[in-house]
Length: 318
Image (cartoon, rainbow, N blue to C red; front, side, top):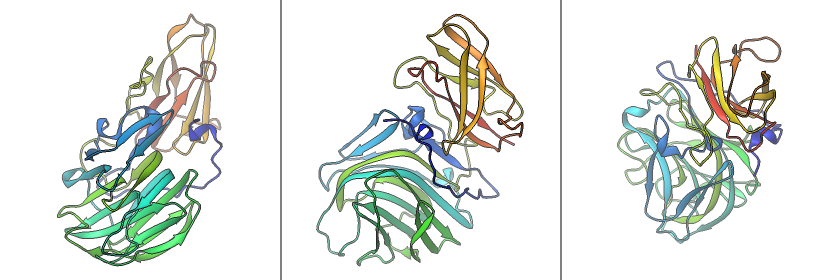
């Protein structure tokens, strides 16, 4: 499966508003690094099921309601801003809801946030619909939507209480956060994956990000090539003004290096001088193809002359 940067994404992504005390956390499956191995790490919680890479997509699969595979950040790793935004790009291949005491309540793909002790929001993506839970036990709010293909979902929580759920920038559901000792943790947290004991199925995830980051790394750091092959990277990384991109390629001669932003938009094409196959470098001055300095954030680079080469990740900071 091709990475979304080569799919020509036409969807306009709402820019996350970072809290004054922190930075945006971004994890992308194209890095080849599982969520629990990056910084800040997403803690993996599982009692069955599997999480595997398929190309540049992360597949989570469970086969019964007793199985879960979810990833969460909590405690000192996050701090809840006035406007919290949790976004993910995912597809629901299969989802089955189990019988529970609270009606049509939960499904296979979870995007959940605890904003205060035992208080928060639960959003689920199911086959053909998006769900928002607004009370501790009762049918969820639902909106019909195409969910089998890759879509960008956004959960926006204002002042910890007012919740709006979007698909591809279009608002689908609005409601309020609620109190529940069983649904929400005693400390703030952000959670995604198969996070329900009342549903199971198969989902595919391209990336996840939120703006509740407080401590630790400035943003998610990744290690491209962890699934095999030579690594690509940059130094310094993160960088402010300029950096050197490092990669390994099999062709000799000059090699093109193309940079993309996290939304898949092409930012700049560079060219490594002619040389032998193997380890190569190219300088990037932090400018886009129009000569403008790129915004702080995560950028990906690939070598289209060697499609088998691993992608690299570089982060620009203020």
